[in-house]
Image (cartoon, rainbow, N blue to C red; front, side, top):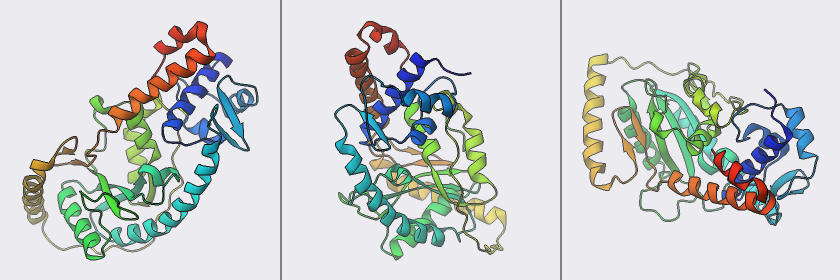
Length: 309
């Protein structure tokens, strides 16, 4: 279904409001991919609308942003340079971690997945493991990162170029729970940039979370970068590993229990976000949308406000 011009104008404004939270002007292709809408649109229709004058929206070169924010274009280019440097390191680390037999997917998340890193940012990794192997995998990954001096410690203020394991899922728990489904989480899902993918785990992850299309209907998968090597098979009984998994989960949970705030820790999910980002991002997004609607669509502000995702 093709959106009307008025709806497209509204959705473009909403999308730029969300990107503005992260100081991130968007290209035409990015606006299409991350368009916040209830329905799909075509590139042709979106690009045609962008060629018109949209209230509250500015343009510099190939980038679009909210009026008065053209300085972000220079900042984005600087962050692109920083991100390229961090990407080189991320690839080396992911290559090393990909030799662990229980690792099924390693992707970038956070600012690096969008090439939007500041100089002092860390590198966020998203990992999917074999079923019933999440806590064994986490312990091995942390051991390797610690050995090579690449682990970001929990209380480190500046974790420049250090590796942060911000989310691990077991392959049998890749569906995001219904109470966590919102615009922020939808972005987190579609922004994962895979660097290692085994057994089509990346594709399975996206297919298991098709609910993201109700927020970002145009979002497509990233091109895959699969490291080529042969993993060795570990000849231990499944029963032994199952027992080790339970023991490692209990030990790690007991160690972390007193520090848990907004993190999610279970046998098949480990999400380490000490700060509840969605509690900050989503209210700010709505405030920005309300402001741009009031400034540029005063007669329709109430109507548009009801349509906010």
